[in-house]
Image (cartoon, rainbow, N blue to C red):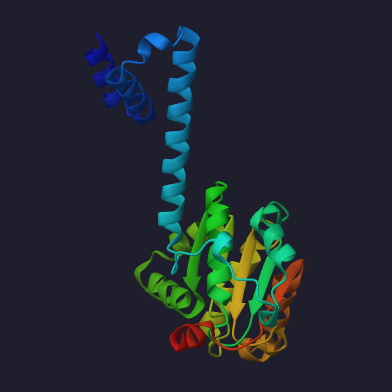
Length: 243
């Protein structure tokens, strides 16, 4: 009877229950449980298994560049990182409030790592996240316009609870890039959150966007209800190499 039950669990994709019940049988502990305890154990195992598989899917779909975590962040004074601020970001309440985070600093100061750490934390809390280099994202969207998949790509971006735009304003935006950026920011404004990382200070983004009217509109929506992290110090990669 146990073999038949295990087989039915496997075929119904109840993998958490399957493993828990199989382990109990093999260890000979099934008789130690009351009926209520056994049911509770099986349900809890299935719940945890589905939750973990859901997090794994979210992490895979996010396409993070780094394996970063909030616990591994280094809060060195010379880097100008406020630990309390980052810990507040880690609870992801800013996503519930549709707020943005702007992270600036010179090359190698850890902007992308911090953004990724917050993004991974968001995935662990059940939020949909996508991480992308801004130049690469715009290139993908330009190709999508040519092959007819543009609306599908934009809809995918709009559905994310958190969008991480890395390397923002790394180079001046051309007219199609500005228009696409405006559409992305407009779709997300007041409905979802965006983390933006850039080597340039926020004050210089305006000139990199270009067109005055569009720059005004984009900047107003990005900066509105945004938290700022301004990193300082020398490159972390350079320091690591020296060590």
